[in-house]
Length: 139
Image (tube, rainbow, N blue to C red; front, side, top):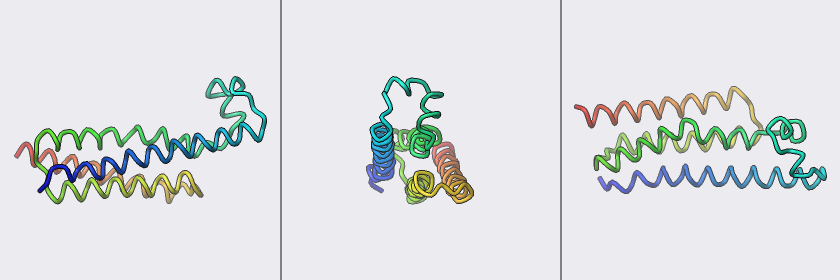
C-alpha cells in the first residue's frame, strides 16, 4: 500500500485546524468590533471570558491540540516504519472524520451529548489505531 496515503487524513486534520482557527479569528474580531472592545481589554483569559463569553470555536481550537497530537505521532510512526495497512488507513480516516463531526457540533449548535459521542468515537478510533500500530510493529 502506498505509504503517502496516510498523509491525506493528516492533511485533513491540519485543514480542520486552520478552518477552526479562521472561524475563531473572525468571530472574535467581529465581536470586538461590534462591541467596540479594545484588544487590551481582553488581554487575559479572564478578561476575554467576561467580554466574549461565546468560546465555542476557541474551545474547539484548543481541543484540536489534545488528542490529535497522538494522531500526528501515529502518522509519523507509520511513515517512519514504512508500514501502512488498510486497517491503519481506515482508522486514521475514521479519526479525522469524527474530529470534523466533533468540530461542527462544538462550533455550531454545541449539544454536549452529541459532541461527547463524536469525541468518544474519535478517541476509540485513535486508541484502536495505536493498538493496531503497536501490534503491527511489535508482532
